[in-house]
Image (cartoon, one colour):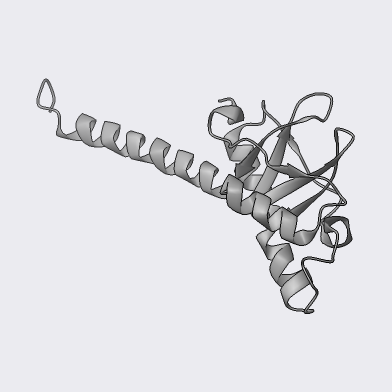
Length: 143
């Protein structure tokens, strides 16, 4: 399955954006992470967790701090050809909740979240369970 079918459009900010601008971008895009992009290249990611651990806890001013100072870098990315189960495994092993989906040139195409992948997994398992129940309860030859 193409991950772009379940991913959301990526929300991006520049490295010189302030933290408050990044937070507003997250709010406006209804996302929990933004990709920090400079001249088309990914420089980092800034997440809700970064807000808590790198801004709130040390009592930094989000209107004065540039996102480049508190972003997570380097960034692990995946391609749209990555299998959903592989993406989920990577996120679980690395304790990530978001991964940018990029093209062959490293251009950001979308953002996949663990929520997207878990919803897909639940949908798939529900369909399998329904099929098995239908098979087991079918009235017919041998049923």
